[in-house]
Image 1 (cartoon, rainbow, N blue to C red):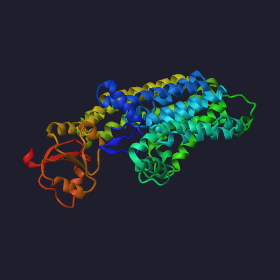
Image 2: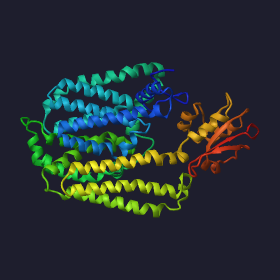
Image 3: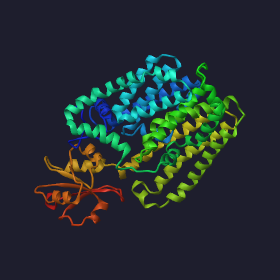
Image 4: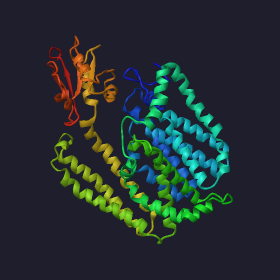
Length: 505
């Protein structure tokens, strides 16, 4: 009932700003209801928009061929393919960060400082998506690049004071009405706890400093095989090492590919350092640096094609290693997956063969990419690999994920709940609130966070319904009163069971 303050289960939701929720509601006006399609449309549009922006940045910084390779490396890496169809905030954050970088690149290369204000405007929208992380990493990346290249005058032309006022105006256009609606407690939660405390003293997702070095290679698959090539050859051949960096500190030099690569490098390094300094880490936090990694890969593969056959092994060896890994996956999956009990609800060995067939398509394309790389056709090699990942994702989305839905989705249990519950009858969720049941049941739940609350709920008069994780039942210190099982999902590890009173069923 209040546009400025999101709510979850009828209670004020203080963890994130509302831009994603606004966009989902806008999409619901198009679909006619707040369904799975409406929840995903904004993220799909954001993913497509980020592809277009990454292309334009790559074309402006390097060349058209580098831009196409950049799009391939960004748009078909594992994390972007997933986030582009997943109802989560981070792709919305990524598109506005990338939009801000595009406006900065335009202002910098065209010598039009007024475009920098659009950077701060985009950062404001990114902040409305997920907080100050929409401003700080990209702004620090720009400042680091300008400092490394000795461009103090360009830092002054950023007009940080005025730019931050533009950013603040966008944020305050929402925050002031939100504070009025949600009160002082909401303001303290959304501004201080969810940003300052979450970064400096997080209460969950604790990981070591080097965490992102261990997860990014898998998240950026398969293009992570080309990251060493991009980093080493980009520094040597495009930037020119320390000598090239010293030359770029001369203000009389025009903008060239060296500046573009160094900026992309700053974008990646500053982002990963920014999130590594906090002990609370998740792999999706660094999604905003994926365009930078793609830009470096595009620039270096373009340079390798131009200078072929110099440094040819830096191109052929990564594609050969990827092909070898794909062979091992295709050969190993039928052996490792055969007879797995957890695969039984999803089709058992048939599922294993479907997954193997999906990776076989990647293997064929990876082999084609390696073959093209042997002749220096970097663009064609990138296109082949992108086609392989695209095919893998299509097979996964259309054939494999529906089978996983049978086990992991809350949809079926929620449908049973909606069909069986009478008007005004409550249902509780234990041991913690699972918002997917709220989404599919279209009903608020009683949030049961402790066993005492659970015991009180099941003993209240009248008909009640209980969704409880099956693995939590043996852990209860006091047995529940007699309840009847109505339905259960197929997840044998963390699945839910739906219970109610015997006389009610």
